[in-house]
Image 1 (cartoon, one colour):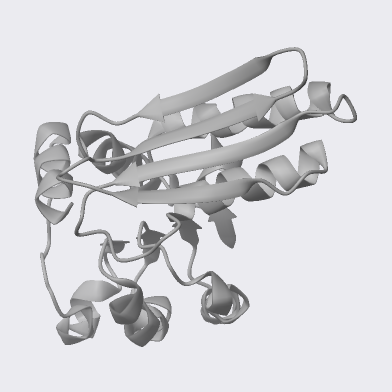
Image 2: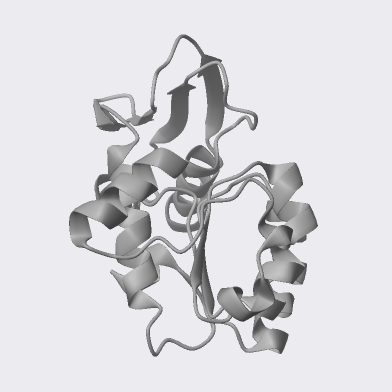
Length: 209
């Protein structure tokens, strides 16, 4: 993902100030002039989010697997006055999927539809279910009123496939997004970084689209 973000920055003519595996080693004078785009691991982000909040001009967080400390993360950024945009998935297509899920679930509420979610990712992905699948599940539960079963599959180098099926006695509705590469995530993350200019507070990417 780091290389994908670098390529997208270059394509847009945006300066890359630093690429680092240890964000806490970034010079504080440099950090305060920069937006941090974080695609690391859940463990790394847990150790770094306070440094990011306290030192960077703004942050875009694409790392997932930290929902259990979400309140602490939001508090750290709000107290530091550092704008932050986060998402379980920065793909514009996936965010369109979220909107479609919300609308479909609202229409089908109370009509006897049972939801199931399947997510398939590459074998290197550390969290399961994926953050995207969890977001899909939260949207379904909130709008349809039914908690979906979520199935996770890890195989090969699959960038990401997310499928929601809503099944009744009469029919089935399938909503699916398949990523061909990680490029879409990078494009969305850089777009989010540009949105931080003049932004205040902590926002989920889908709220800003």
